[in-house]
Length: 366
Image 1 (cartoon, helix red, strand yellow):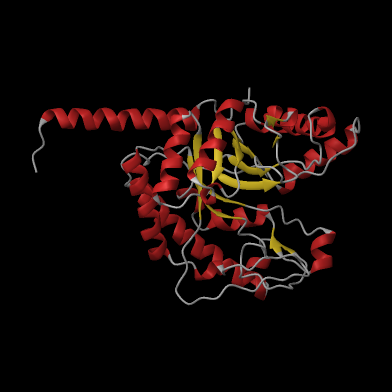
Image 2 (cartoon, helix red, strand yellow):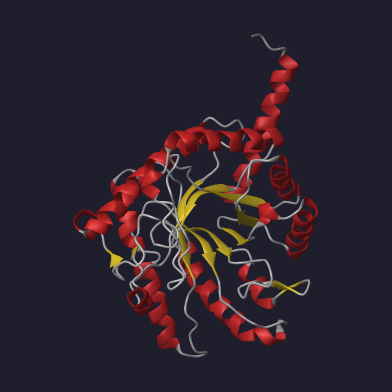
């Protein structure tokens, strides 16, 4: 087919403009700082727009959330972009038909979960293609796409039995422990789905340069609560060591992690130093070739006003100082507070106002 020159020029302009928008989101200010919005896709269009206005008015530059490829939610993606807010889209794998989830367990508060080993790459391809096609139609360029959520522990991965052993599996366990070997099979299947996502992304008209972030991993460190409830997980260092050994770095632009740090007593420098050392070892281990994206972090608070929320504001400032060090070392690509919405105890927007802790949490990384 032969195109007239004018449409070609216009198409080139649109594509270049889209890529410039995406580059600005991905590279400026160097570390994407934003928030999670829970259940964004399930709100009415009017409720969604109210939250968009809250975010815009509060100076939020990035949002992490899940959206379905329907017209309402793709319009939300466009409205976020029009408001100057970059979207990190979280999507999961599709699964083979007739696979039942592992049942929920009330005692341990574990939800039902599909086994990652049953992820279906080709069904996933169809779903991802629908998402990227809709984004192209709307002219939306994502700030990032994150595949999966906390796949390294029982709450989100049905390959872990409940109850389990109460362990944090290490790299050796993934080849030797019978339960951990099953989990490792799911990790390998996850890489196949990641490859499909990358292929769809690479052939997108507007999003071919959108960063891919691996699933935000939980800090399954084998604490006493895991032992008490017999809940299993694979440590973040072991999970990423396994995935990298099987080709992860060819598929992603960054590594997702989650962390909800313990609060330290005001002025206790030794406790703060110890917490930072644990973060270095268990959540952000050095030696990886890609930056980390802290796609969930936060502190809980029951405060109704900023004046009542000073302890949380202090905790945020301490954590931001630690994260600034990671950023200056080139080890951090983004941070996303959990969560925006009230009445969640981690929310930073309450009573129509952004809390002081929230202002610190969303401040650009300098």
